[in-house]
Each structure stands twice: as C-alpha cells, then as structure tokens.
Length: 517
Image (cartoon, rainbow, N blue to C red; front, side, top):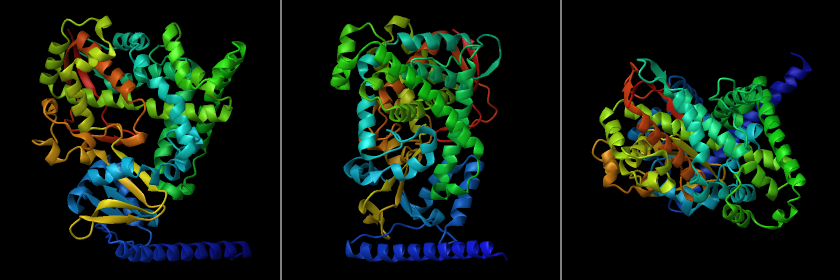
C-alpha cells in the first residue's frame, strides 16, 4: 500500500472512531438528561445497525423506489404509535403525527426549530438562501418582501389567470373518445401562470412553440428538483452523490433568474424610482392598488426593496420553487379523486350552473361550498407536501410521545430532526370518522379539524401563497365544470400510486376521458 493510501485509510478509520464515539456519547447524554427532566424516549424503529442505521436508510430508499415511502411511514406509525424515533446515518429523527407535538414545533416553540440545517445544504445549490431554505433574518426578510404579493386584492384579479385557463381548455380533447393525462397539462397551466406572476414573463409552455430559453430552464429545473430530493434524503452524507449534471442544471437555473433580475434593476433605474425605496413594501403596494393600472410582478417589486443581485435571485427562486408545483399537484390529485367519483363531479356541475366567467371572483369561489368540500377532501387524502421536517436549533422538549405509555415529554438535543407526516395525520379516525381513508367531501359540512388539517403547513412558516394557490385551484375546477359534462376514469389502476419527489403526486398521472357539457 502506498504512503498516500495508508494515510487515507488511517484518516477514514479515525473518522469512523470519532463518529462512533460522538454517537455513543450523544445517546448516553440523552438518557441522562431525559431522566433529570422527567422526559422519556419514544419507541424505537427496529434496526440491526445500532450505530449507523444503514439498514433503515436502505429500507427507506427501497420504499421510495417502489413508490411507497409515505405509506411506509404510515405503516410504521400504525405499528409503533403516533411518535417514534430512528437513527438513519446515525442521526436522530423523531417522527410524529401527534398534533400536540406538531403544533409545538410549528407554532408554540417555532423559534427553537428551523429548516436551514436540512434545506440550505440540500437545496442551496439550486435556489440559494431564502424564504424556503433559511431561518432567522434571511427568512424574515424574505417573507416581508413576498407577503404583499399574495394579498387578497392581488389574488382577486382573475384577468391574468383566465387567459392561461383558456389556453389550457383549448388543449383538452373533448368529445373525441380520447384518453388524456391531465397531470402534465395542469403542470403547464400553473407553470405559465406562476412564471408570469413572479418573473413578469410567462414560459408559454401551453403554447406549441415554447421558447428555447424557457424549455432549457424547465428541463434544468426538473432535473435539479430530483437532485434536491435525493440530497434531502441523504442529509450530510449527500457528498457521496457524484452528479455533475445536477450542478450544471443549478447553474442554468440561476443564470436564467439573474437575467430577469438584471432587467428589473435596469427598469428601476430607467424610471428613476428612487423615492420608492424609502417606503416599505406594504405602503408601496397600497399605492399601486389605489392606482389600479399596473400589473404586480414580484421581481419588479422586490427590486425596489433590494439591489443585491444574488439576494434577489435566491429569494425569487425560493418562491418559484415553492409555488411552481403545489397548485398543479393539488389539481392533479383533485381530479384523480373526481374521476373515480362521478357523483361528486355532478354535484359540482350543479353548483356552478348559471355562473359566468365574470362571476368567478375570490369571494364567489369561496362561497361555492361543495367545490370547497371537494378541494379540502382531496388535499386531506393526498396533500401535495405529505411530510415536513424541522431541526432542533437548541435543546427542546416535545410535549408528548415518550415512555411506555406514550404520554411523557421527549427531550431533543441540538441537531435532532422532527419529521411530521401529514398524510397519516389526515387519516386520524378520531377526527375523520367514518371511513377516514375514503373520499367523502360531505364530511366537511360538519368538521372543523384545525391543527389536524395542514395541507399548507402551519404556524409562521405556513405557505404564504396558500390563498393564491387555492384561488387558482378553485378557479380551474369551476372553469372545467362549466365546459366539461363528464370526467371518466380511464386508468386501469384504481388506487393512488404514490410518486414522491418533493411533492406527492399520482405516479400514473390522471388518465381520463372528458365529455363535453
């Protein structure tokens, strides 16, 4: 063996010994601290590898490959209870569907938990630091910058979205006896609307001649998204992933976004709008709303608040990353359900009978009770984001889940992860009885689930674009109901095939036959 090889082997051996020592010390300290604070550990996920948890990692990867990772987590909760712990790659993960723990993490003790340790490393190469990836001042500043974008007054302006919906409807094969997969069409609809809303320039993916730059960006974005998902799963061990194409895709994405930022900054200088930088963004939006003659574009407005090119690029990509997929996945999952429940579609058609396009305001859509029931029920069964994680930024205590009875508090150390599975929580029979696994929109006449229903997260970090997403979703459902008489399932597989990237969508798409109204 060469000298260099011997040194490398020695360093690797020392690193392993150090890793093992730290892990053992961590578990001893955890046990001692738990006893002193009257806490207890939750049930353990069975493992053969006590130190590294590699069997847990490999089983998670196998479940992901066979399209069953979320169902696997649900089965683990059924076996071990509402809260349990595991040690993939030797790091502690506390998995919980107990609403008391989830409320503590997302709201009651939210300052003690963050996303940065998980997301900045995994997602940073693609989007940089911003409202989705970071904690503290970076997150707060980003939220202040984007929050006015999603005000009700801006959402209520349906003119922009209607144009994209018309293009979408023109692509639907109706009365031709053809099978169409709605999933990619919903993707393109939301992509065009969100890119116009954020960048001021639609990608025109619904058009037959999608611009070359747009297609290059979209291909890169799709590839990088998959890479981020794998990096999240691998955690600190993601350095083992060797994928030059991922880094090239990230470069393409950031360059495209920086070009839009540069144009926005140049536009600001040309119009000599220095006085606007002395105002906060809320008052500026109010002024523009009062004028009522200008389109609100996020990149232009953010350029009034900051001239830092890198910061603007990262914050915009954070918003686009979060907003591009969620409404499209929600629509796909809703129509997956509707295609298998024709009576629900008939009830929607009856509710929207007589409505005209100009009637479809934010308030009117909210008043369509059965439409809202259907949306709520589909988001309950198949939340686009079925699982969220937070890292303990300081020693913390979860209120329940420990000990043999599962009622004692659980002590968390700095760096421990809390994983919250909304897919499982949304099937709690105590809240959603009867038939918690069944699609029954009528149940929403009587239930008010509160923290037991979190399709957009909860607490201060809930999705800031929630109302915009729900508006786009409801608007699309109603416009289709105005044009389409029947939605018939043409998928040979009746059950939902889970496809988990960063969102959860149907692995078989939404294969339907549409009948003209």
